[in-house]
Image 1 (tube, rainbow, N blue to C red):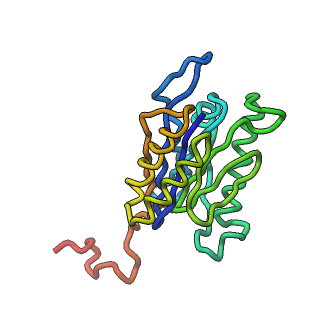
Image 2 (cartoon, rainbow, N blue to C red):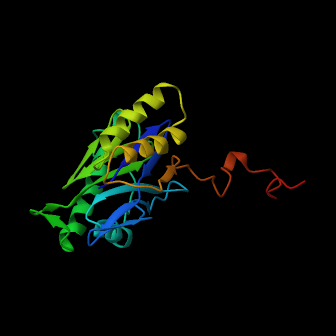
Image 3 (cartoon, rainbow, N blue to C red):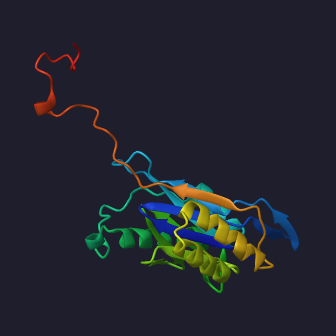
Length: 216
């Protein structure tokens, strides 16, 4: 009962989702299915991840309050992908943390995580299932009952050269039109790549000779 799509392009993660859920079989719109979770990353100024949620309605609320990300992947280059500190290994630890939260609060179906998620960080996207994060090398991930139409639409739109910031929410709208279990409005979120903060002090070889911080 979700149409959620993410595209990673040029270091940016674009994510959009419908906003329909059911309460006792009564449709309710305006639900936020995309979370922005801070990352305790001391090396960057804007450490956040995007997490899109499909499945049990309690899962998004639980992650909002209980998921704590204490680190970011140490390596982001292609060569680091399979390393112990690379993005894929880091994403797997996030998937395991999400699964533990679901287990502790009973958000399970047949003993497994009741839902699928999309994780976006630093220009990469993964589909998260029970204890596992599946990387998408093509930078496109989708979940929910409207994923098929949404992926087909975004592939067609991007092939025309359309900016992903326009193509992703437009593709979700198309997915909604083809899926009776999804409805607008569409929530669109953009996650820019983490940036390294400017140094608070100049290196010794750049210090002005008078020691006054370069003041005239």
